[in-house]
Image (cartoon, rainbow, N blue to C red):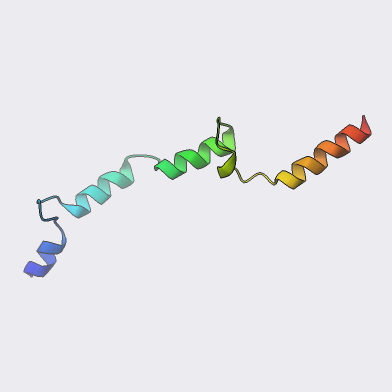
Length: 67
């Protein structure tokens, strides 16, 4: 039973499961914030965007030719 107890705490006495629980309830992670900014616009977030660049270029060209 002591193996189970030792697995729940760090050597300094921090309760690992409590930290995990608080982290889960704390809000967005760093990567989730980056993804949200990329989708909603944010300076320097283009590398995280899921926008298809080729599709946008094709749409832009077709718009120019239709003008």
